[in-house]
Image 1 (cartoon, rainbow, N blue to C red):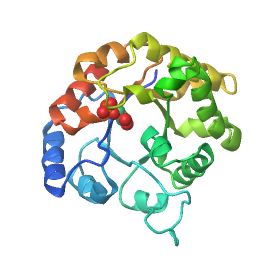
Image 2: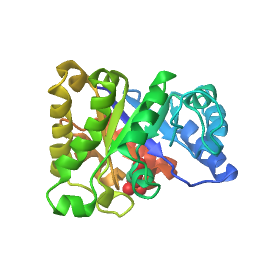
Image 3: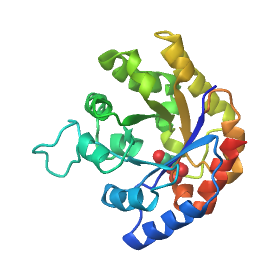
Length: 251
Ligand code: 13P
C-alpha cells in the first residue's frame, strides 16, 4: 500500500515575515498522520523553514538543485549536498516553469536528478504536457519521453527512491484542473511504463498530481487508483487550504 503524499510548492512567493506566519500556522495544524507532508520554499528561506518546522513531521525540499552534487564554482546554483546540509530531504526536478520558462532540457534534468540522489535527496520528477501537446493528442508521448530520459540514462532502479509528479502545464495556476479520469489515464500510463521495466518499482513509486488542486477537488483526484497525492502550488500558500488538501489525502 502506497502512503499518500501532499507537497506544497511555494514557488517564488514569500518574504521572511510571510514565511514565518505560514510556518507558524503549519506548525499549529493537525495534519493526518497517514500522509507524508512536505513543503518546497524558495531557497532563500529553506533554513528558516527547516528551523521553524523542526519537531514536526513536515519535510522540507528544494524547488531546484544544481547539476552537480558537490560544492564548486557554479555561480547562483545550490549543490544537492548544500541542500541536504541545510535540512532538505527532497528536491523538485523539472518543474514545468523551469522546463518552459528557463529552458531546462531532459539532459540537464537527468544530471539534476542524479545529483539529488547522490546525496540522498529524494527527487520529485515533474512531467506534463502543454495545452498544444494535449490538443495534438501527444500527452502520453510527451510524458513518456520525459520519464524515459531518466530511465534510459540512470536505470529503472532510481525510481525506488524518487517521486513522480504529473502536472499538465495547462492546469498549473490556471484554475483548470485535469478531471480525475484525465489525470488517472496519465498516471496509469506512467505506472505501466515503469512496470514494463520493473513491476516492483512501478507498484511502489508514488505518483502525485499537480495543477490547480484545491480542497474542493482534492478528494476525487486522490481517490483515483494511481494518484498517490498532490503537488500543490497556489493553495499551499494558505495553511488552512493546504491542511484541508492533506486531510482529503488522509481519508
Ligand atoms: P497550482 O496548484 O497553483 O496550479 O500549481 C501547481 C504546481 O505547479 C505545483 O508545482
